[in-house]
Image 1 (cartoon, one colour):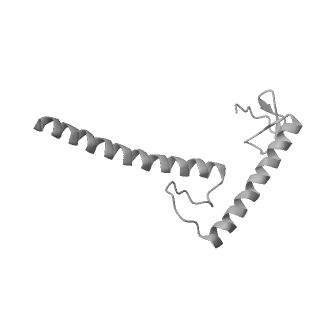
Image 2: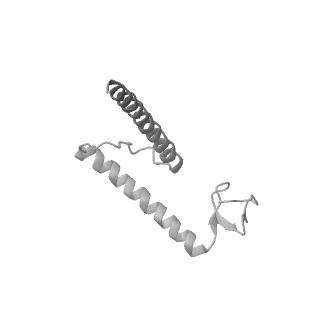
Length: 107
């Protein structure tokens, strides 16, 4: 009976360590993905917390403005029928290559 308790405790400790490590790496992954999207100005907090009205309202307004700009760019992209080129920043990709800079785009 004692051996079952010891085995249970070993697995419980192992699971706890694995869970905390996973959470740490997930937060790091989220920070990297947000940096790729240019969303560094918003804090990453996966825990439930109270929001400060003054600071968060301004940051949220900036975030909404940024989201609206992205939405307008996506609408422009769908209207033009051409894809976005990450090399030169123009919406001129058709048939897998950019018409402006000539680079091949795989996205």
